[in-house]
Image (cartoon, rainbow, N blue to C red):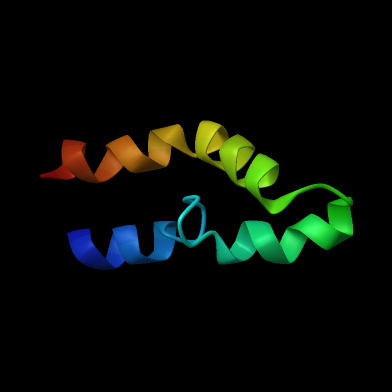
Length: 53
């Protein structure tokens, strides 16, 4: 479940960021800028699996 959770969360991180690059044309902004904001917003989501372990 730990690996699956981070696989789902990979849509937010800048190397992959599929969700961010899909949202970039809608927001009329660069995909990299949106992905950095997404990482800031989802920071608690990155810490949660380590607390579960």
